[in-house]
Length: 263
Image (cartoon, rainbow, N blue to C red; front, side):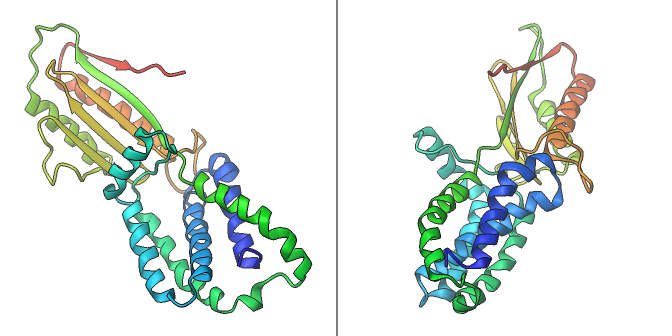
């Protein structure tokens, strides 16, 4: 399977997109190409390794990808990152589930491998080891950590009184304006913290006893280049940050916006 044309095309597409195209040309196509190519690479290898369990593997691949693209995988990601085993991450984006459409195609390819393999047996032997190494590198590289921005909004004076309920309400209004949905707070924002998810973007806030608000905004890498069809993740994060600052300034007096400096 490692030396069939469909596998090699998907592998090259995955690596080229993650390490060049996604940053150089952010947009709909490059945003989804890694998901389609990544699912194809994993599916082709899995079907080839366990040829007698293909329909069960279709189900497992689909369920696993759904879990990975949902907030349910957060605890595993945080655990892995806290142990410093491997720095991984992803942005919740349910539109990525369209990539599962390639699974039946991969099933067909795995059943007809002889039609798609490179003709030269010698060349196939030469490619097996380097392709295996590149595959491991490509699959792991596609789950790079998203870009993380941290901010604190706090009263200038310790004597300033701020309504926590109103503060939470303003944050919820800004999140709704930017089409972010709260998955942690079960429909209504909690008084102390909540986590919102949108397409290629997430926002977490935590209220401290001192009436300060800690914000964490995460988005997929891409950069500030304009896209043809929609805003890039960078632009969405910048717009969300601007809305938070303007809305909080409009509803409250005596607040300051502090950005965490990083190297």
